[in-house]
Image 1 (cartoon, rainbow, N blue to C red):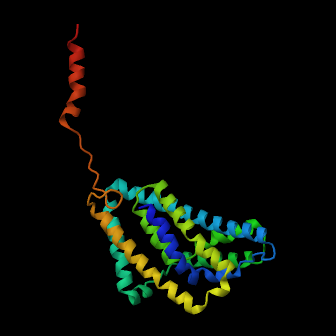
Image 2 (spheres, one colour; image 1 turned 90 degrees about the vertical axis):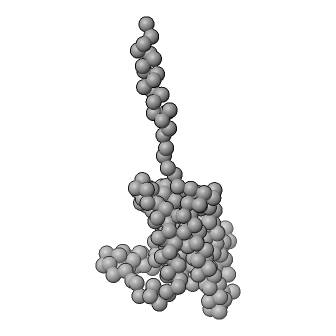
Length: 245
């Protein structure tokens, strides 16, 4: 499933043009100095990727717990079905909003911090802007995180989110430097790609959870089996040693 991270990142960056594009447009890039501007953009992307990787570590820990409980594949199917329902019932999905006080306070602090950092041009400022940007609500990031959850491993979860972040770099970089070429009409057209990506990922998660025995795509259920010969062998060896003079 790791290969889907890059594809999802590339596709989701079309969605990011509309969601995160405004922040990218406002980045105080030094356009008079191409070298300095390039390092500023790189710092911004590194901050985002670090944030996604951190999310992957947290999600990976949770996924590992599900894996130890033996319900990882059920979680995969459940997430896949939920993603399809969101696509099929868009109006119902929009009504499902987080009504958690601390969550809204945290988002407000992140947005305020981003606003303050937009006034500076140092490399560490761009790094922090990217890091904060990575924690803003984004449907495609949620999709990537849910997919990472099904991997059931901390390192795979973090690697998945890191690769996802790398996949968003090309178009997001183009947005920063070529913002005048992205008209509202073009944005609306490219954002229509996102639902297709979500549907494909949902189907992949469901197929993965079914455990069809297809390598990399739908691995079979792992069942630990111990043969009778393996269980008896240590006892027989012990008995043989005792009978020796």
